[in-house]
Length: 315
Image (cartoon, rainbow, N blue to C red; front, top):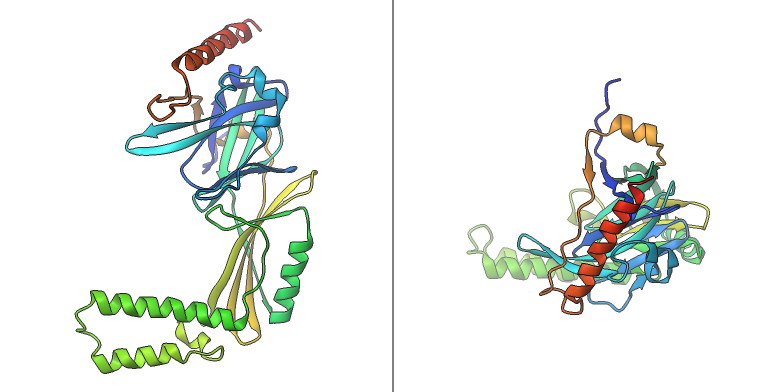
């Protein structure tokens, strides 16, 4: 059978990182980063914030795996530095990762004494609705009242509550944006396209913006006011949406919803559609970037890897 092309990445997890009901994986990131499953947030890191969650540290299953005594570390690839976190992932359950303006699903399947970990950017299907300001506010309230929902900006920052800007605040936000652009233009341009009177007119126009004039300042006829990712995790399943609110005119908003279906896989399906499987690499833990980790600790964990390989190769 001819294999289909796929944009997914499949990683073979070596036996020493495979347990009875889960795997341990090491995930690299460089900024805001979140992992969720059907039970909610498992890991959340946000730069310049105290908002940190790591459920790995509470899961006793971690102790069966190598490097469990080093749950996080820093590494370097080329000239770039990254954080690395150990995470557990149950078999046959979809997990969601949010980072670098991407929403990525992952799915682990057992393959004898090893496992396959599938990672893929979640596809999107767009729906568009037009709502009044009152209807959008009611939609926000219904979402905010649902305790099974988690909200994130597209860069991975967590949103504690969602609300629609007042029309006055919306106008001021747009004014600030255009005044900033005008000042940068005045500073960086030699005025070859606009004379001083034209620049004064632009300043006047921005100063006198109103809710009625906002739709006229873009070619699209609308202005994006809010965009966020919604993750629903109710203990039974997990689902994803990306919602964007666009202001069109007074009391009219365009609501764009991207439905992002989560996929479940079988072992036979994965082996049939993927072109290449990458192997697990042992972590590189530079002591210079990790002064809290001792060289002896790394040696102990490497011995665990060899011991587990030997032990599981006998089955």
